[in-house]
Image (cartoon, rainbow, N blue to C red; front, side, top):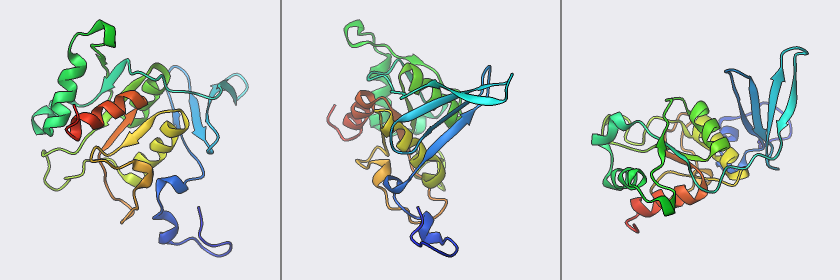
Length: 202
């Protein structure tokens, strides 16, 4: 969103909260090619028909299921996690059929692929801050061109995205172009549950 009506854009135009975005989306390649995007009025999914070279609306008004079926996190980093994340992962692995647990682990390691599966089937993706790399205390993912666009998509699909310390991704005032943030994103119920563990409410 430009702050000017004429002339070239500025760095300040880019350093805006995610809530100021006008559009966000991604393209995913696999057995089919899909374009998924929002302009602030729901999330629409289009699938490429290679026979005509056109995308058609295959997934109108996409909504993330209210409860997660999957959790997506790199468990190889578990020894570096904060206690709240460790307790949450133990919780979703516990058996409680009445509560829909355990969740199934699915982690591809690419934000687009993990988010896309969770958007369709219901799930939560976590890339929390950890103690693995002191030079990356806030995690690996970039706010402006990874976390915020996906947070916009999640919000428009009925989900939620947070950092884990009480901040909504879309409300963060960027300080630099390549600023990194922790990201917990997916089905609202499950993001709320992670937040409860991290803030000591569970």
